[in-house]
Length: 114
Image (cartoon, rainbow, N blue to C red; front, side, top):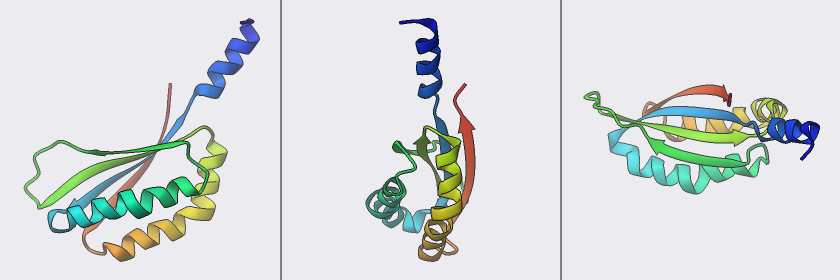
């Protein structure tokens, strides 16, 4: 493979990670987890802005009655992330806020693969 093609291949393979760290009350955890997997994450993927998604429970001792999750969405471009934030995020974030009001907290982070 010529050097220029290899360089282009490497650039195209770099991904961005849009991460939502969510603290959810224990009393609604199973309902929230089911909703995330069956409604919210498919809606996020349905925007066409992300190529893959994963969800992880964060392992830690927490005595405040909440559990934490990392929900990860992978995108090949900052343009996709920006379009998601401008067009889709307000509606999806409001849907989650309304459904689990006073039962969750969300922190969003954008990470770049290095």
